[in-house]
Image (cartoon, rainbow, N blue to C red; front, side, top):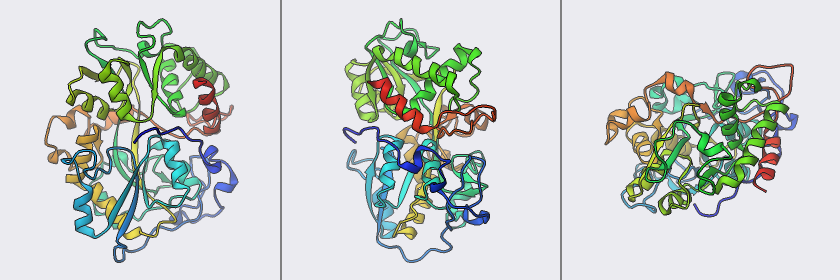
Length: 402
């Protein structure tokens, strides 16, 4: 999990509109018809039936999603899967969605836990294929509000199995930041008293956090969707992040590094995942988290199958296992997110956490601005302007960090 970098997306990932990223066709069963997302996915078919497990599975996952006991001997849901299926699991953790996209292009991985800023890039480039949800019994219990969403399906063709979701929270040291912050202002106000103590997420998608802040504080910009930014809106968001730069003590992609920064006091406030807060608190740091008044960006992750996978039966068995009630609960409770399986809450050790994470709250889920790949066709429905695509976001992020 150490020293991960934000990597450039592959050629097809930079713009979902590139014709080279897909082929023409009209068979929606293979995911080949043009989608509302503005691109034509390659003509690929889902697996029709399971075979004998191939004995191996290469998993590309966010840290905390495929624990095998190597980080904590008490946290291990990989070994039971291996024992049940005979599929030996090799886990490769990644630190950002850009890194996941790049690694998937190597063809070395069978499944990936993709967030919304990676999933459609993988679909458009043909690196993942549609999934046959009938071969994943756990899919029947997935919350309806997570199915057939713009980041995990095209034309109602599923490209993965929902895993978990949550908000990017504002974490802070309770002994240094008082009272509890109600706004993201301490992160973005250039006069913030926490100059040099702010921790920010290291990814181009973080531009959306600035856009979300501007939605509330500069409504005249007309931002309706933080992933749909025209030239003026994009400049305002990137200018805000350039002003934020002197405030930042660290940009993080490895949540363990952010945990250490909060524990040491080098950083006292920052964008975080709930797992960071949970871990810091478990190790004695006075850390808490909140979702400020402006709202939050967030993630809804999807397990996707690599088109080039040589272990697809093991891949399907993994998707069914990892989203089953008991295991989905273990992952969600450890990582700090809402589970995708509607029966998982009954399996939580701490029954209060499902309320904390709003697991059963479709209205709350609808308020989160989930990571989504920016494309030239504005995701907010505007047709009179072009929006900045992910390539623009990537170039701007490089400039912001300097």
